[in-house]
Image (cartoon, rainbow, N blue to C red; front, top):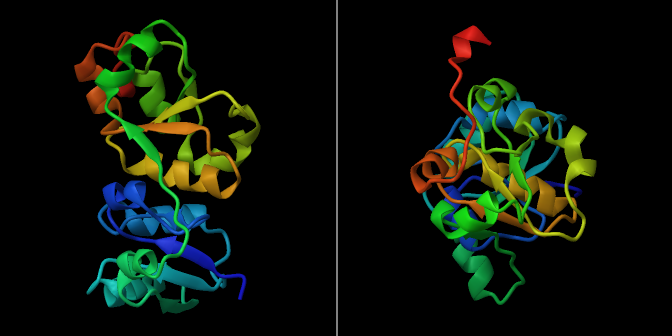
Length: 199
């Protein structure tokens, strides 16, 4: 059908396992705005991977923002896919503390998918801003072979970004769990804070 496989589970579940090339936009975050921003064609057929019991909610929430093309959902959820022996993909995700030394030594590139205003307010020193809203415009900036790190504010948007990158064949990424919140707490070097209202 040429359908988009849309996974609406929690990001932690998506990280542990998902259908290859599926896109993650979790029901637990800003679901409707991100669906509207990232899925350009409202007529696109959609196949859902949802938590068991949340399928109807997902269909309703999609239709509220004009996406009436849901043609089905994965019966039994992702576990049924896995139990059937089908191939699945994962995302490498690490706590900020585990990569602090590499980031501070500038051994690995860091990509920040928060909004430009969030980035300008405070960011990891030398991090590259590739806002999720415009991720497709930045695809050429991601290394083709070298491993790179990805983060957002708290871990939701970076998993969306990781799913999009992986669907485009970019797999050499590592997600920083809990995002910038954890980065600041870990002692990774960040720029001086600037109040967003002054920008």
